[in-house]
Length: 597
Ligand SMILES: Cc1cc2nc3c(=O)[nH]c(=O)nc-3n(C[C@H](O)[C@H](O)[C@H](O)COP(=O)(O)OP(=O)(O)OC[C@H]3O[C@@H](n4cnc5c(N)ncnc54)[C@H](O)[C@@H]3O)c2cc1C
Image 1 (spheres, helix red, strand yellow):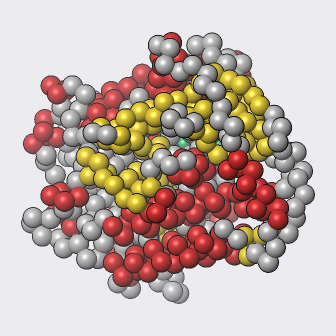
Image 2 (cartoon, helix red, strand yellow):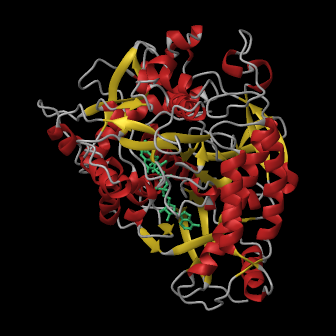
């Protein structure tokens, strides 16, 4: 079959914060760069980020990157790779100031410096008191950031392929990555994007859960494509549930609300976080707050007729503060919860928010896999950044505002690595295998010829409900075991889905069916990895992991201080060590070396 072919130095899949930051690096260095995206760039999920981007600028409270690094390692429940965490925290100020110079309209302090607000888990002096580290543009930080980056890319002549769906990764017999196949939604035609380097920046997959703060486009396509091409997915058992999704709707209420002074209350009006986290209270890290809320609800102290939510109260803040710092939140509360937060508290519940795991990379943004005796060997020509990647800076739990930072730091470093690797002569344009598009065409042919199949929506709904029940905020051994079987059955059903409309032009049913393949890979990796990890750590909390002095909070470092690697083929699991060494030994924060809790 004669398939159109486009050739570039680099192809980036995804035009959210990570993809755009990487694209800028490449386009500005003169490489011929294509960016493929399912939606117009400024509609990527990054646009929804509210609270801010972390950097230890120290504009209103004293701060430094050691404290940021300590908080990130501790927040990760020690599963984060410390070389990557050091790299990110040290580079934070540079990338944020750079963004400001690109035109990012940050809020300002009276002295003209960037406004910073406190956020959960970010502290001074190794966990003592909250610090103001989150650089914000009101409660629309992601929106401002994405627009600043997009405009800068237009200036740099980045070539965008908008409303193109990347389908599969192309690898040759040696495992080198040579680009992707993609479907143009407008025409329904498939094309090959042949490149020296391929960067995945496809964002998260929060849509494997029933209740999610994520956009409908967050279907884990990068992870699905990587998994089908034999690349393992790392630490997929760790999903962050954001404490404050609007009850019933799932729409996010930023942690910035608590940063500005918001308080969580149970049915009797009690500020219950004082019991669970006496120091940081409502600003404890997200896993702690989500579990505390779930415990309140499970023990009958929830609000409403079904006692199934708690309240987020900002009625004590001045109306002017709410209008100035949280205008979008007020709008969301009025629209989705029917309450004006100036006068009434907002009903909230923990909601799936962020995937800590993803495609394994090092801090340079190179995708790495185990090979012979090295657990982290780069895959030639393949890079990843942003939420689809696992560097791993977030380990078992991400701190709020560290993701936007991750996009900037690792988007930039992935771009830099591509430039370096091309300049070093490591990435010639390798010949395509004859069957480069075979897998994608077979998937599409199957959909076109399938009869008597199930609806994509039904299978998807069963997957989302099953994941919500079997791999939620708390995890139960029995439910996990059942979940593995259920998800495998659902995965089998997904192989026989049928679409009623077989036309080509703007066929969104076909797009959703192809996305479901990716969601299924992510759901399988999550449930299998979670069932296997017999301890509690960060966002993964099991009922059968004992909380004893030897295993604080159920964490078992003797056996489980290691990263999970899940392979799609046969649900195979492997493990690799956590990098406990920062880049420069003498810069290791004192508290980390002593491991203060
Ligand atoms: C509601 C909400 C609020 C948040 N608030 C904050 C915050 O305040 N601070 C913070 O640090 N983090 C926040 N986060 C997390 C953070 O926003 C995300 O992790 C981050 O924006 C992800 O960026 P990304 O560039 O990796 O992907 P995204 O912004 O999700 O972009 C993914 C891109 O990939 C493209 N794509 C995907 N699949 C394909 C395919 N098959 N073919 C072609 N293109 C494809 C999409 O079109 C899109 O352009 C928030 C998240 C949510 C959901």
